Image (cartoon, rainbow, N blue to C red; front, side):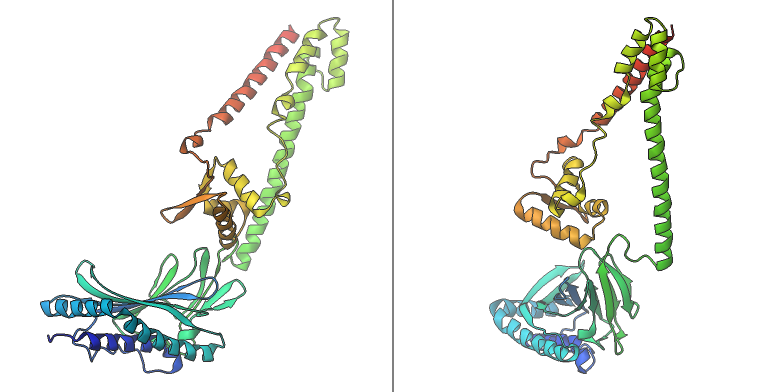
Length: 406
């Protein structure tokens, strides 16, 4: 294999990028364009990372396997040339991409610009040795914003990928994939992949994504069933609460009466029975004063604060504090029944103000109060102490009742 000339390599690569991204402009098909190169890339990866406002961060990678000494030397010369004259490479690339965006602007009616173009050349082990030439740039208004939805693909309508190329389109965190055309080769957590050869026809590729709200993606029939289930669950919970309230009333009103009068129904009958017993009612009176569970539970059953009276930021801080000072951002969205986008906006404001800290744990965002300490999580004993206290009250009531019976 002959020794590659760096200038020819770069010119060919720039031509490939232009062909790949100008499919909607009626340009020549993306056939690779590497015939003029002495070193042919093994694959080309084109990635568009779309933001909520429709802008996209693009990354175009050309990977050349370095299997021979000649290929190693040719790529080293290219890398040195890129490092020594980076501005020349980025200027030519940016001009070509600006021309592509201008054509897409005419086709879509959206104002588009290309900016922040960069280029790097580096050697990677993947695990074989590869030389990777990478271009990055930002494309304003690449995707169409339709309310809270993003519609992607009209700016590269009719794109063609050859067998060594792939197109990856990713969307913001908190969004969910809706429709795609055509069917992608692979669907990942936050992206879809088309592996060439793919000849996108008119109206392709197309992707629609929207914020993943609590009920997003649920079909109409499923939504009706879900609402019905929620109504039934609410009715059951209401009845159980009424039953619990009635039970509490029985404990509060009947037990002292039964102790004083040997099985009286309400508080008035219990008092009368205690008076008729000629002095034995004093024991029942003492039991009534100390055996009322409502008195013990009153502090725990304080009504919750109305969320309508709190700001979004106060709701988040209150919720995190109630969970011991730390919880996942996804759980905040679920608890408050917010969209992931709204939760992210509120959390970002709190973090900017220093009212909340956050960090990544795997794929999850974890939130914590600034004064959070891991040792503070060990607070599960409070509930046990309350339960044991209630058991002691109940036991005390039984003992007093037995005394009254005697």
